[in-house]
Length: 428
Image (tube, rainbow, N blue to C red; front, side, top):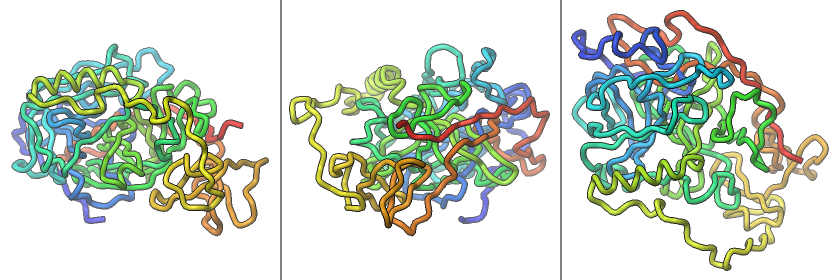
């Protein structure tokens, strides 16, 4: 990864710390979910300009940094805590875990399609309106959209806009893979604020927990993961908040599809851990209605995904399963006799089958503890499986560092930590 790039601030910046008091009343340390660094373990990304940087401040001198995705020429999908104040520590069982006032007037928000938020001249577009999910509860409700003053051209957006998953469910495993790509402008390691502001990418991150899903169900989360959320594996950090989880197969085909927006995550002293996203399919009406309104404001035809999905070609019946056997190449789940087409790297897909401690894989195959599926040996099963404890912290906005007064990620008093216990298991 290229060395860190600092986002500098002028000493006379209009937005003082008093304006951006962070997610709570402390310094501007965006920690509403530890998902906000420049994609931990990723690489610099100069290509995918549909993944944008969200700035509170002035172009090139952002006081708060988040990430987002262009889902239409003048509409950016992001996290609500990127636009509204929220607690530093997120406890979904605490009724007081709510959103507060907007960080700043709408005219102080802007986005850039450029890979470097430290420059103030390229790819910048100013916000016109901000839309947010109903109510002020944080957990399961961390989504917002920013309508822009002007339209971003298709060329500037790398030839495509992002399709949010609203016509179908993200749990439709006959349609979607269980791996994602993350692209954001956050830091690349805890306490590394100077690395924020550069767009980075990391691919083939496993989805590890979707509440109620038949394939990737969760154990008892203690109320810290809601049905309108899901959890991914490691890769996102502070500043990546609001970035999308791009379904891997569609991303490989250059037709990006968003499962949801990054809300929060955990961290240790040396690494960012996991990522909790707010699902787009849980807010179908909010997303579709806002897109139709923005299309009218921007004088363009609403995207195709704002319409009902086309009827199944077979009149609504479930297509028969394919003949692919364990280890055979596959294009989707319908290609396999087991009904499961999976991948460990997001590139090579093969027919697989469910496995656990009682349903062992055949000879020559090993059970991947993250997905609960069999893959060809000797590939070691990634992940640890079982129960995991994550310390949840912060909002996920990266405050732009001031070279004269560095603001460490964990600056200020820590209000407390919340243990999120997620049992990664597969339903019998």
